[in-house]
Length: 407
Picture 1 (tube, rainbow, N blue to C red):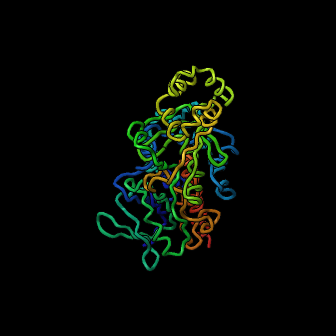
Picture 2: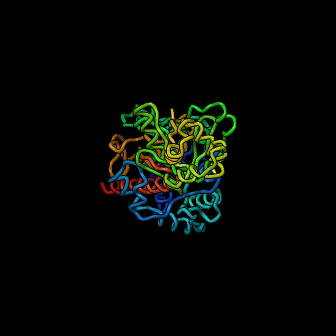
Picture 3: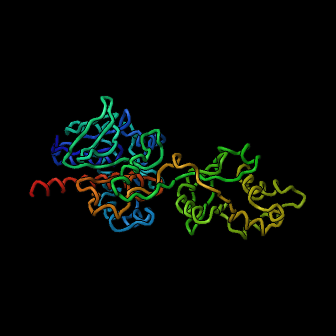
């Protein structure tokens, strides 16, 4: 039976924002979620502090999104960091801005914000259907779901898909929808890991003694980009912080050539000349490890990285050692598995969508969030884009309903 309600499939920030836009306008909304509870990946993102957005000028903010302009930037520009902050205030969750410009709720946690959001949506008549996995369309175009009661169908006035990307399967973001979209003739770009760790062919010593060690006070560079963030050594390679910031560039290089080089400046506050001078002044009778420790305070995991990646002969020459310390080349051999990535690039292509995020092949069906082919670093940019595209899809659905009513 066809209804005048709208179906939103997925209960992450993109789906919930679509539901909010629609219910604010007085439209009935049914949210369908495959998992036993809502917003699981959103809650995981806030496990160590919900970084929901990031301060900065409009131009600087938009430039953090990789290789996209036009339509995508229009949607982000219409719901940016200031809008996210105002939206949180409306939920009774004032913002806190960290020292690097990252925006969090004052509570720092995702769960209070999610509870307040779901409560407000429920008060606006939004219905949440848990354990309802979308399985496609019936021959006559109805939505199909597997539910605890068996297969159910729905014929909404419009549909917003907010099904997520291809990582964190256990939280509901499994990318299974891509085959259903492909069968419907909708263009979907293959998923690729983003904000991910990378593999390195470590020596046994590096793997056994330094796995889990944070590497602080460094500058990382790749592909003309640089960032002064820490990262972590793992038993497989490297991850976290600055590695995630540069992950798109590194991933692209690996896909093109089979490997990538991450350049590490172990002492970004000293230039090569000063490093050379200090090493030349160290007593020659000292061991290399002692010269590095006493002259430059390079110890622990930093020293291990230097010995791992630089030629030992070069380290005995102060000038060549300074060059290695300022640009230590770490060869990355691959990415971690897709499901372990924080986010994914790829998804529904922009060619498959109109300017209101409606599927050209499926009028009345809209897409939002990470299931669309865009990419961004961590730091609040991912969640803001999910909310912005969710808002845009919700507004598109409203416009679709209004046009249909006037026909």
